[in-house]
Image 1: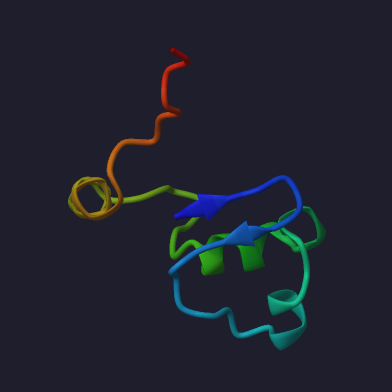
Image 2 (image 1 turned 60 degrees about the vertical axis):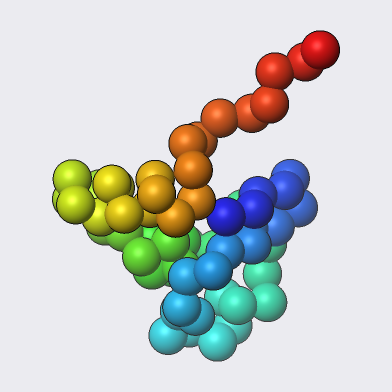
Length: 65
């Protein structure tokens, strides 16, 4: 999953709101954001978190050298 300051780019399936698809991450509703990221207000299940960790790796920035 790739994030930038101007938009959210994800491999998640598209949201049902076509208008939200063309907006930057900060311009969409929390519901559209959760739908894009395939999550909910309750977060991910342990199984889903484990699968995403295997698929995308840890949520960490590379250390400066």
